[in-house]
Image 1 (cartoon, rainbow, N blue to C red):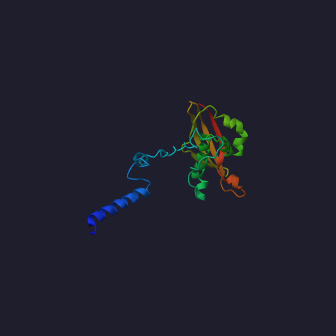
Image 2 (spheres, helix red, strand yellow):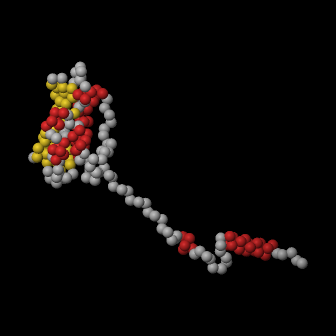
Image 3 (cartoon, one colour):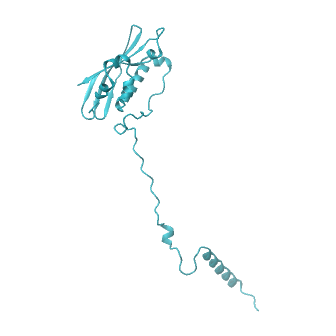
Length: 197
């Protein structure tokens, strides 16, 4: 018996190896059970990412009464808090609360004297039918009198529906006099007087 030729032996081994590989994949040299199209393009498409939801705190979209977004300025050092920077910080928080239609928060920033002049319902009614609100409070004027500091600012409130309110906002704090309470030493809205015009 002649020994088999090396080339024939190699071909036989290669053919046996391919047959075993195809059998392991569930395929034979004949028809395949899975088509190439099904492997390349699966039946279930890859889901696309969900679209981002709109910001809930955008003006005009935020639900009334929900907390304002925390976009305020960094806290001030105590000395700055006592002066014009502290007054403007309170003023801008007040203006922002009105713009976001959080009238309860804005009303809570009024001092006793301002609340004696206007009730909560009357205050909120001032802004009815304005649409989206914009509050302009440019730089004001600081004055001192009888142990208190006052900061007076011209105020303009405009609405997207064409309404407009103009007037003055005055802030006040007690100027570190002995016996003053913590509440008196903080800036607050002493008066808020605006009228249609």
